[in-house]
Length: 256
Image: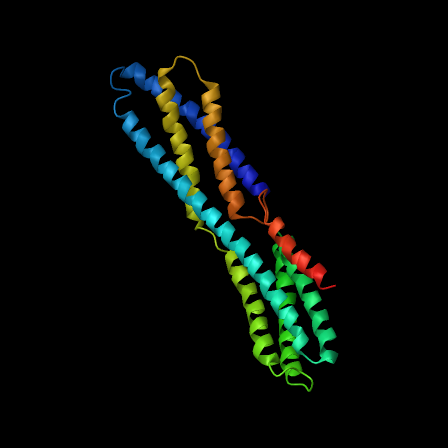
């Protein structure tokens, strides 16, 4: 996620810059008004930093919640595909091999879909292929469940399982595209910069710059914002859902 690294790098440098600007503004204000330069500043700083803390907490909590939801949907899809695959045994023996081959091809496309989650063209190509295979599997299931030799419960048990397997793909697509409005991230970015400006003003009472405090403040907020973005977009950053995706791979191996 190169764009996030660039964005956060810009935030870090921007905060350092505004910390220095705020400090210089404070120094000039102190020269012209020594007694009033710091009056009321603590209340404003407390309000702004408190609001920034709440904003970070809510965006972080939301990102983690969506992360958990996406992880649970992967597990649900694994269970849905596994259940449907087992119920193929209700079909006539001569139809089972064809259906199982389609299932193997289908799960391969599902694995590939999210393997290249940051490449929209590949994702869409695999989604289209998955949809085509779903139609083939559904048509074959309907025809096979009516064939001689099929279990009397074939249609009753297999079709609902296939329906769940198909529906979960749409649910996962919607979940992967569900994010806060972009204005939320712009506001978080802006609030971080403005907080740096106020923090710099508050540090103007010191005769020398405290580079350690300035760097630590900028780094902590920048890293926190990066983690929020990385969790929010788990297919292109450091924190990915690969460990959960492995369940699909394991299911594919169990199919032979």
